[in-house]
Amino acid sequence: MICAGSPDGSEVWLVMLLGQADGVDWLELVHHDQGVRPSGGIRRIEAKGVKIPVLVQAACLVFYPDFFRGVPFSFGRFEEVAKREGRVLDLRKNDLPLKAIEIAGYELGKRLQDLKFWEGELKPMKIEIKEGA
Image (cartoon, rainbow, N blue to C red; front, side):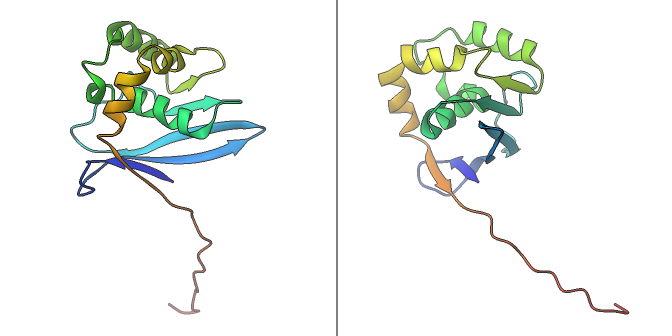
């Protein structure tokens, strides 16, 4: 699980699950703060051969584009593409978020420093069921 939020750590704005299936890494948005407006209807990003930190950056661009306003990149074009993609953005077929990271590298990096990130692992949980309860 990966979370992103306010720089002081007092608020969590995005909660994402990170996983892998058949060699494809994915990040799925499972919760976002009321003030966060994800691009289009995208709720999952998939990629193959992309380093996890880059995948997280792309996810932040897609799931919270308003946070990056002012970064030199055409967000209008980005949002058009996001609306066409449906619920899943496959970075193997549409690398626009990766291009944005490349083009806006320094400015994007500065904005990313204004987010606090947390990661956690899910642990197995045992639930005991008592008869007659």
